View 1 (cartoon, one colour):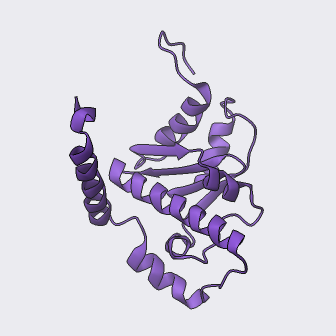
View 2 (cartoon, rainbow, N blue to C red; view 1 turned 120 degrees about the horizontal axis):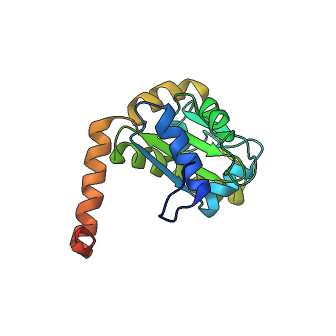
View 3 (cartoon, rainbow, N blue to C red; view 1 turned 120 degrees about the vertical axis):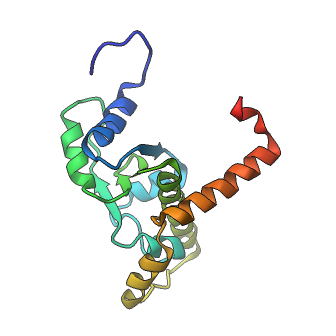
Length: 172
């Protein structure tokens, strides 16, 4: 990291700059620390594909092992290696992350990953999970995965219209 007269959070810089610097199409990187996201990140088995949202991400989620607060520049290479080309990332014992070529695409991946975690935690608390048949996953990923640009743009635009209707002052 270089010196800067502006304050910044070193852990956030290490994570985001690693991805921006190594993945050509990563124009937007998003990262959260939600309760259910961290809960799933703490589970040895990780994300279950056995709900509507989890099935959409089947085979699309990367995992990176927790190494402590991410301030060591040496972790950057290991993080990028863990991610590969997968746009949905679970940072073990830490949180969720997504990246994409646009804000709308990174958002839809993160939103889908978050919903998968929310449903997994709720369903697990309710009792035994009804597994999805493995032969269903390819069609679910193909037809429902969050990575189609037009779908991402349309959903993001709809959400933006909702925010604009409530309080457009964020645009100022």
